[in-house]
Length: 152
Image (cartoon, rainbow, N blue to C red; front, side, top):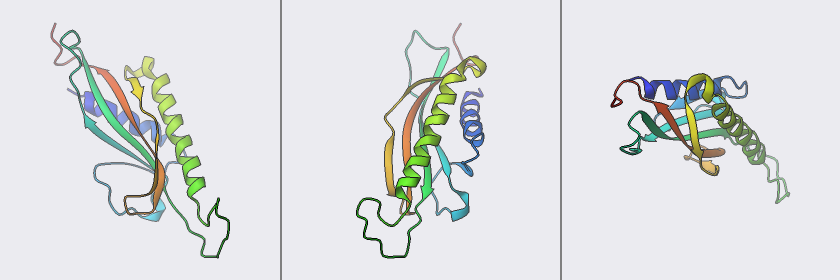
């Protein structure tokens, strides 16, 4: 059964096609270094049972996050809207990367048989994971044919 590998490899490759993404990671969040951003993080959270009428498909819920590290200007800036950091730039760039990847996965289903069934609202992260990261996260529900364990 290679469906799990197919899904994560496809999502990883989709993010690697975007020149703005420097690193694609999975697993626990760690103390990230500054030279690896923008970072796309893939977390397969579960694989729910679909139904007894559909035993030939495996479904995965995957939290996909795109993060950038916030740079802070040391000069005293009095602008209360823009602040003195790159939070708005990070949110803009990371949402763009996330949306482009989602649209590519959605569009590529005919070529690779990986179907994006749903995607939640993107949730903004601000100064996340105690690492000063800003970005967006979204849960993708993806279906993949199961040709190995499907009941005939």
